[in-house]
Length: 148
Image (tube, rainbow, N blue to C red):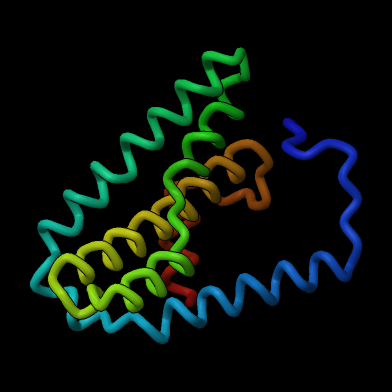
C-alpha cells in the first residue's frame, strides 16, 4: 500500500475541524446551486467541464511524472489538479455580479461537475489501491448510488 502522508499524526480535534469545514463548504455550495437553472447548459457544461478538468489532470500527472513519482502518486496529483474551490468561485462571482449571468452559471456548473468528477476519480483510485470491499469496482458505484 502506498502511504500518501507519512508520519502524520492527526488529532481528533484536527479531524473534527476538517470534517466540519467540509460539511460547511458543501452546505454553502448547495445553498447557492439551483440545478433547474443548469438544464439549458447541459451540453456546453459537460464539454467545458471535460476540457477544464482534463487539461489540469494531464498537467498534474506530467509534473509528478517529471519529478519521478510513481503512477499512483502521479494520478493522485492529477486528480488534485482537477478539483476547483467552489467556496472561492461562488463568492467571487457574487461580488462581481456575474453569478446570475450565463457565464456565471457556466462557471458554477462546470466547477460542480469537476468537483464531483474529482471525488469519483479519487474514490476509484483509493478503492483500487486499498480495497474496502470485495465488490468489483464496476458494481460498487451503482450499488452506492442505488442505496443512497
